[in-house]
Image 1 (cartoon, rainbow, N blue to C red):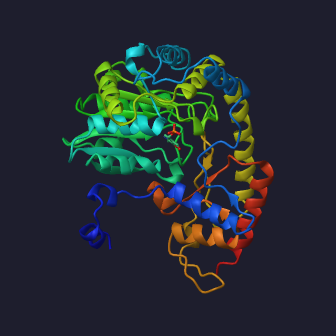
Image 2: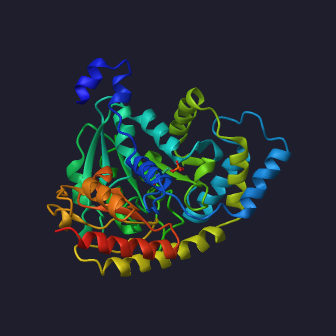
Length: 405
Ligand SMILES: Cc1ncc(COP(=O)(O)O)c(C=O)c1O
């Protein structure tokens, strides 16, 4: 199918080979059903259900009134980069200078910049799996070869150092992971990261993208950064941003901290593609950081309460295997016990995509099938929704799943 399409389309091979983001596709289908009048509970979103805190909105209004309407420096306003440097010191005990920081239009662009600047065609990129949907596609855009190293639910999806060691070859250029992880909510401890770092120390050609965008949504009380290990720090690109912790998904501000060579390369890449991030959003991000972590902490307390509620309700549903997510706002249970079962209309559920479509159409609950994250046996449910919606969704799930024979 794809090769015929590629032979006949005027579009580039690059775009034809790119998969549509399944989280965005699922959200679109859910919106369509809702527009037809169905009471859809959408747990497919990767975003906080909270409004951006008022003090951040006020800073944006002030930025407009103060005339911040012009092009911004490509790597971001200096005051924002200085505040990011202060944050990295305060929260992560990392020493950087503003020249090491590049602010981008969301952490998504930060990641894409870094991959494009590091990966040559044919380079292998190790992705800890289950992984965030865009990692694999952006590696393919850079003509790299994604290599998945998979954790399992029994181990809270944390991969072992041996698995990493076994996956590294002379062609490995980059390792990518998120902690706290989207979709699993798993969190790497300092000791776990140190074990990975010791392996990476032996392979000086390998760089590391440490995606810490969910840093503030961590239920363990401790966040560890890969860049804390001085012996590999120059090879670590720390990615972070404002979307999740400060509930600022629509503002589009993310950043990297990296050695100057990589930061300069990302600056150059960005200068040809988007230029500097929106002036107003940057001033809002500056205010967010200056305001500290209390807003994020309040939201995280709500996510923790909801996690426990959802876990309690899921445990009551036969055939759903759970674990305890330690961060982010997702749970990624194993639902493969339903594979091979049949709906009342006689349709067989073959995989997580079939099950997600069944649940959307029968229970009007939207979740994202695990194949999008490299784990077809699972399904991702967001708990960034109200308690009432979560309770109702779990109830509907139980009823619809019980109908499968
Ligand atoms: C693991 C991970 N990294 C990066 C991003 C991108 O965040 P941003 O909204 O800053 O582009 C997301 C968003 O869903 C994510 O889940």
